[in-house]
Length: 192
Image 1 (tube, rainbow, N blue to C red):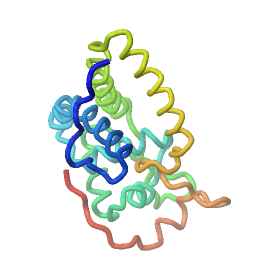
Image 2: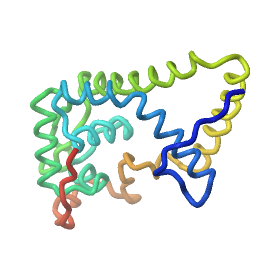
Image 3: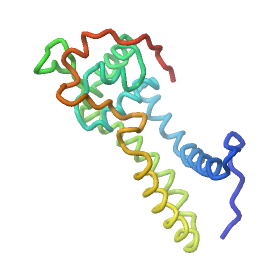
Image 4: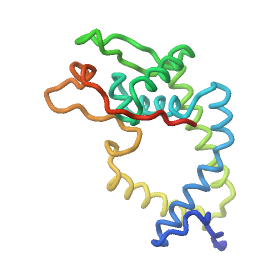
């Protein structure tokens, strides 16, 4: 097996395992970053717009604008502007909620889904480029490590706690009606 190169200095954490894992993740992400940025530039997507696309993909259902704002800690105004831009480019659809016409529901269009898939494909291609360079022993070691990592992540980072997850409405409440009437706390737009 080859010697492992030192990780990024930013990940010189007090816990060596944290540093190694964060460093490996950073290297994997950097491998795909060029293609991901190319896609976002081609579509003229802001960071907030990109986050909305992935939040909708992760939710797997239409979301009310206030759910998106709350989930991404953006103001309703900033969320509305980002959604308007995504709607103009055909990446999301916007419909009235059947229970409360004041509530707008946002969903990925086929083009929006294709965009998130293009980004995921670019990330997978970057990982594939690394896997293709491994010898048989390295490949076997990485397969064991990846299986273990996947199981640990599944056990300790449930989907409901991931950053792009949509908030779950309280039991007995649709999460839409009434929520739009409450003022959202002041938030600031996050930029790319």
